Image 1 (tube, rainbow, N blue to C red):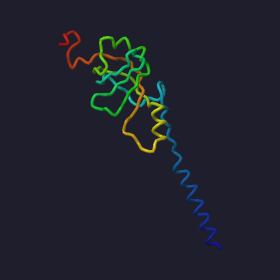
Image 2: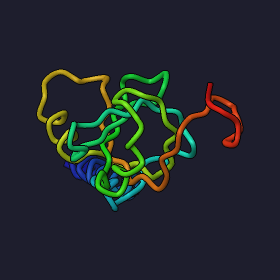
Image 3: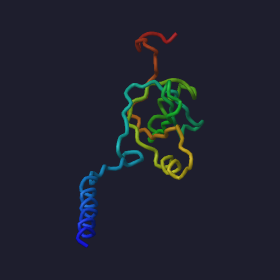
Image 4: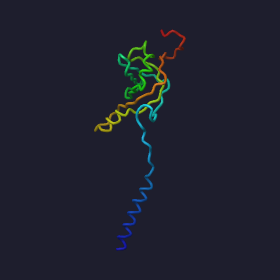
Length: 139
């Protein structure tokens, strides 16, 4: 009888002790433009792709075809794409966020994907002159 009571107290003590140990809640990163920044890009070479009307603009970092960045502000960056063809390399500066739609699709999928989807608030978009000074001719 005393043995059963002691074992019940020990089990209850272990459960209560485990509750106090595992109480460190980590804040979930919020997704979407203007939320929690996942990473920052500074003059990063990227292939820029856009629709003919430049309503949607996206980019892939050179050397990483598995991460797609969709622009949060395509209307602000469209004037900088006047002399650019879709697929050209430009330097991108901005803050990247998780894409909410892609996160929900991946969480509902049975099979994990290696493709990563982000949204990016682009601060600056410039030509990649491949180490040449802006004053020098491109050719």
